[in-house]
Picture 1 (cartoon, helix red, strand yellow):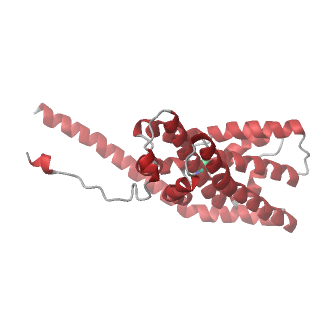
Picture 2 (cartoon, protein in one colour):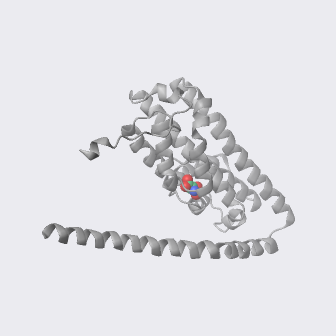
Picture 3 (cartoon, protein in one colour):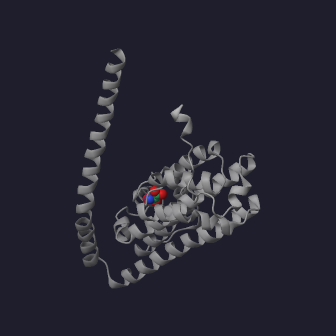
Length: 269
Ligand code: ASP
């Protein structure tokens, strides 16, 4: 009887969370439907207030951030991996594909945690004891892509507002962008909100963010893919240094792609 009562109360709690999740999903759906009109309105004001020259600059800003992000993922990470672990970086990049695509389409490091964990533990050979710590931690504080965007965006906004940055300002930008990226939540668009902190540190108007908001979505998707790639790379380095790394799994191109056979026979007994 008591057991029955417990099960029921547990069910009620579960039902409450299910209801809450449904309400939140509904709110998100409403927001997603309204968002295009909001962005249209933002861009409309932008089109009427800034010159055509600024748009040319905006395209250059976009391209600079985009290519630096790609360079960071394809050059910096593989290089660090090779130097610190001696592993073949091409295998790493190939195995990162699914997680990077998932991160790109969701623009959220947090939403990608299950895929990053799966990639790290079943494809790359990082033991679960390490991955279950480094991956969620990385998705929360390790955001190189976001820091890159914030640095370039600050310089871009300073140029639009014709404000000269001194060497000390550049150092401040580097430091605060690193701090702001650590404070950025792993959900879409937060990097842009945290950019306000960097701008304030060097005396730039926060309104400058409106200039880049229109092109930020695609950059957000790209930097999230870079962020999760960094998390996996750090996971491998830590696992290797702790002796918690399966080298054979890393070298096995098919690792993680095989269908697992689960033996249910013992359940019959
Ligand atoms: N969307 C990014 C992430 O989840 C954070 C950001 O830069 O806005 O990694």
